[in-house]
Structure formats: structure tokens, C-alpha cells
Image (cartoon, rainbow, N blue to C red):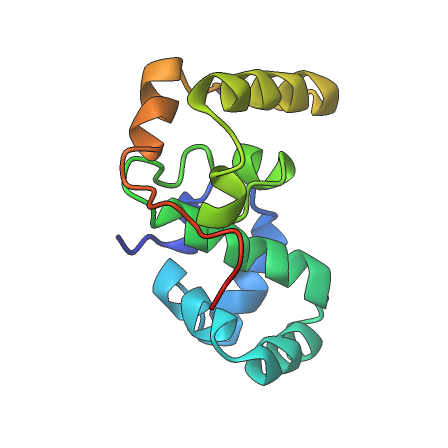
Length: 134
């Protein structure tokens, strides 16, 4: 799925304005940065956002595109350290719900926390990741 950056929960609105000025308006646009580290670095410099916050935004775009996640919980997931399928696979649905509750309470985040049923759906498409890559 492709979302407008403004649809992502937990994104600094000033960053969205700066990215729009650079021609980046959707999660697909951010994914093009993910695949090109040099372009990611140039965009961080030209927008004044900084590499770490921009990388966080790209991680949010990656997570939002996962089936069932969407833009609603990506800020919470990234704050919890879940930035892709590999980091998601380190949890079970139950342990992830606990982690998201802890992060939300610790950071005093506003907004909902996904239910166990919602989180469980995120795991249905995960494929096993080998411990050692060939």
C-alpha cells in the first residue's frame, strides 16, 4: 500500500512539509530513498531533517506498507524498535503487545495501542528468516 506521509501517525509535521518541498509525498517515495543510501544522505542534508530522523521515517514507511499495519501504528512500532520484518519476527504477538504497551506508557504517547488480534494479523505473512544467510 502507498500512503501519504501526512497519514502516518507520529510524524513531525515540519518534516512532512520539508519532504513535500523536495518532491517526497508518499511512502513509495520514501522507499526509493531506502534503496539508495546516497540519495537518503543527500535528502537528509537538503531537507535539514537529519539522517537519523529521516531513516526513522523510512522505517515507518516500510512498516506502514505491511499488510494489516497501515499508518495508524507505525510511530509506536518504530518507537518500540520494530523497523521491518526481521525485527518484527523477534517477537510473538503477545510479547509485542506487551512491548507496545510499555513503550506507549513510557513515552506517554497519545493514540491507541493495537489489540492482540490486530498484532496477530501482522505475523501471518512473516516468513521464517534464516539465522545464517547463505
